[in-house]
Image 1 (cartoon, rainbow, N blue to C red):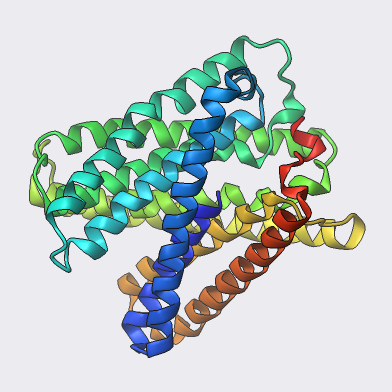
Image 2 (image 1 turned 90 degrees about the vertical axis):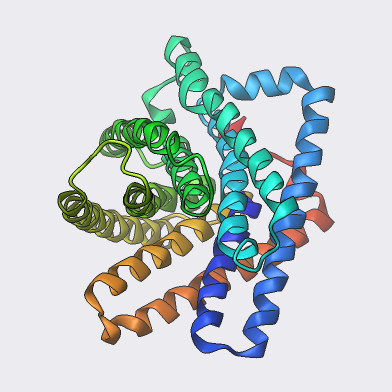
Length: 346
């Protein structure tokens, strides 16, 4: 989760650096990149060791209605690395080894895609321990994963081969992701209306339900660009382009409604309850960054230059959030609190 959030803030910083071209932004961008790589490698090693040393704990997590969804973060990060390679390293002509690495990361994300969106819902469906109260925002991670998987492969297709095969698979993945998202959204919204609010420890994860909306907009727009390169379905591209623009706006306004509701509920937690620091705070960072990416799409369409200050504020907000959570995480590592699971996950 920390790797995913760091990748997102790094992408934002790279975009800001491209616009402003200030030396300290370049240093900040590359620092965030190295932290993201370090996080992914370190936690991947620890997770693999956990699989071999505590396999029964992994099995227990796979059948847990909340903990099972955390597996998606691993493969979201892997797909983001693929996007990073094709959008940053390949244009810089760091090609041969990085193309091989991107294939490896994408195969990891694609093959293990079966675990979360298919196996986990199956296990939770047949389980008698799952209750409607377990339907919280972390359930949105599987559809986020599928959307990120789609645009990662779209970026590969824009610069590489496989354009005959990629659109066929991605149209299936897009359909799966949208259906999965709206099913989860209906369950989570129903849970909020008919049950009490979840524990304050998990309140930051409320923002996760914004992420599928923003990444879906990126996924469908890059999918159209792939079809422009190779129209595998012989679609009317002008009609498809207009349809995707319209769908993007529908999703955007739906996301703005979710965003307003999220702000109000988080404010309610702060005033009436509490918002203690836990590792769930990393869940705040990625959706804010994804919101920035969506704003970039909107501004490009409408040439809304007068709205540009909003973009800078969102970037500053995401950077401040990342810094606070990173600092508090380091303090938790020193105090060893980081090894204690929140009660809500036990």
